[in-house]
Image 1 (cartoon, rainbow, N blue to C red):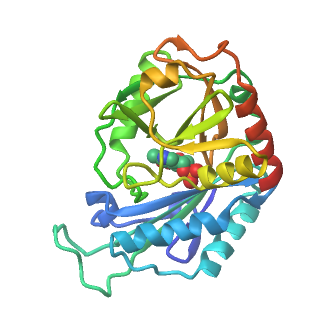
Image 2: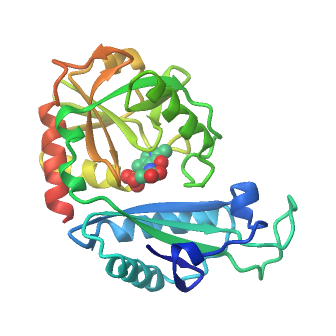
Length: 280
Ligand code: PDD
């Protein structure tokens, strides 16, 4: 694989980042995951806008222009022959040359890394036909989930808890209400209404979420942006999640309780079709 590191395109074995990099020692960095379908970047503008918001929130200088990011992503897609897959982009506060809690001087160069992940046929994932089973677990992340930081230890632990219980993913719960999935936004459908938590610093403002809600409203589907409990979700007609890598993924069981008839729901199936059709 050819990867990008600070304006260089290198074989992955040759790419290097300092041991003092703030991303490595302090998780001081932000990231984006952009999907690629038929060689085309999906929702690049939305991901770029969120990247800039994340960087600003952490006062990390943005070292590249939108055009630079776009050109680099396109080159990686081409050099690595990616038809379907994802591009991972990470920007950290860079290498201060030592470990220190205080930020390094303003002129420290942020570190930019990008790499591709090839996932042939990802839009036709068999999981989308059977749906995911999920568990729920207490949300123990920090309070600024609207910033897409690389500190992913808690979501990773929650994913492992789900796997240990034979499930595909976990929904995180705070004050009795679902916040979101480990790496996706959470939805239920009740009597035809799509319900998903309102935007705040409690959740990541998903780029796929924004697109799916727009398409749902355009298709005259009812949308309610509000939080919901696990009990309400278990009693819903359907449930699903959205993300750049899973698109719209149906949920068929929550903590062992079957959702609806335990099969992929019609609203989730339709939204997945619309999203894939409209984004490509
Ligand atoms: N995760 N919520 C969380 C906590 C996420 O990590 C993600 C994305 C989302 C969905 O956002 P979007 O629709 O913009 O992908 C919601 C990416 C895919 C990841 O970490 O791999």
